[in-house]
Length: 194
Image (cartoon, rainbow, N blue to C red; front, top):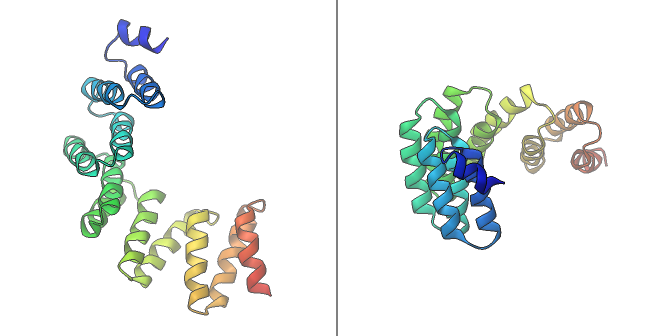
């Protein structure tokens, strides 16, 4: 079905992505790269097409090529927060923390509510041992999304490590109130009450 769609319209990005995914599943990375390249050529603004090729490159441990592709795609789409976020993630994976931070900050400028960019900025700050900066980013996420699991668990871990249980408790209680069926919040809360 997808092959037929690609024959009818070679620029139909979803078909190209599906065919590339099938190629990956059948252990044919060259075929997948060809399909992902065709998808990117058909629509250079398709974040999904670039993400698919980046994932395939990362699977083959070709991070430098993934970074090059994403840098050029980000330059071609400078107002798309998704490209900046993707690029920041690659920089982070390549231990280029300053570039990662700059990319995530740009993503936040373009999309101030981006939870992903904010969480990744927190991770950069954690890796640089800038705890106060990391806490600020995590608190900003929780202001809008009090039940965001990664932010809740990271922030409570910070407070727990610092012995600031009075700070950790309200974070977990707010998370449980917003999402009472989230089991990952119950254990740390129980430990704080113990």
